[in-house]
Length: 230
Image 1 (cartoon, rainbow, N blue to C red):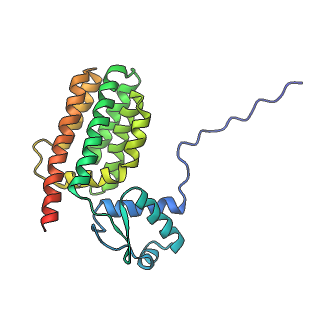
Image 2: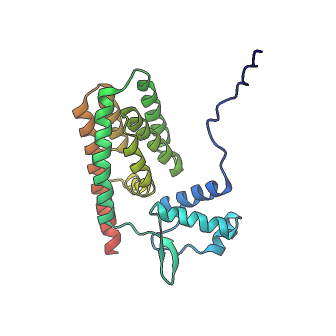
Image 3: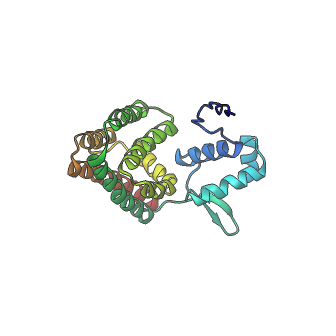
């Protein structure tokens, strides 16, 4: 007896978002975009009213954002938007420089032909959102660009580490993108990373990443120092 062929099922490209997922995204974007300022209390009742959700969802979201380093729980005050010091930022930039430069260098050496149009498409997506007022679109496009590089390099564990820092990395990106005193626009740096990788130039790919992060680090340091002085 011949068994019938199994039914053909379409691949699920995007899992449906739960209510909690949507609230997490909105709260994260509000913190990264500066709607909530560092040190500001996150009071449950107003958040419930604004978002139209239960306290349970808000509490779950706050715990999730605490794990990302975007929220702190302060005794006798409750949850507040986490402050980001220069010492913390410097550590994040140090981690980024090591992991991203290694991934870019390896990617330059091993990438396949199918990867080339994907990286160019990802770069174009970043450029398309660079002047947008919607920060989330730029952050998502930038994250997608780097994820491609890490995955093609085979640095999957390193990408998991970056993902755990992603909330704070996005806050720092928001600071540096908002600054207007760059020596070199961020898009130029990403173009340099893209071109070096596709040229299979490992040293140039590493240098492009390190230069990009060095400038972003200097900008963030000046901003955070001014904020601390104030």
